[in-house]
Image 1 (cartoon, one colour):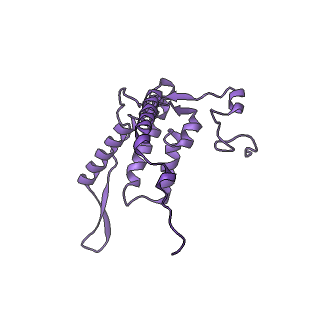
Image 2: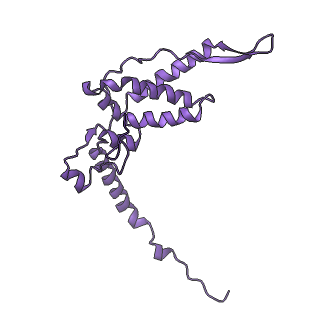
Image 3: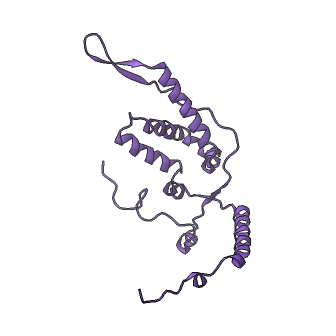
Length: 190
């Protein structure tokens, strides 16, 4: 058994840039994800409920873990809400493709770890795992590049915003004084 040497590894070197000439020469193309998110069917959350326990001291003074039905229900509710939100994002369009169905459990683990990291029970390792899961499913800028995805620009919305901004600038020019006109001459007599 020998360790691999050299060569490209995940995250070694700069990520491909869809705007660079080098990426263009190499034929690297990014899949454009819809800017307005995903509106298709949301799959069922694939993981079993995470059971939550409370620490209690028994009559002998020993600390014991006792199942908390209320906290378990709260965690399941939060996971369901985050799962639904995740499936409304642009990335969910990519996850919904048949070729990406293998990501389902990784997405669920991101949801579970995210909810865990919202609690005081989270460890540094949990928080590190959260970031790695987020990268794997494209929920970070680096993860989007790593997966070869880019969120498409909302060109209609951008054009509308540009036109509105230009109109407001034209309207405001006549009523607004220039910076030079706002200066006040003061004598140096003090």
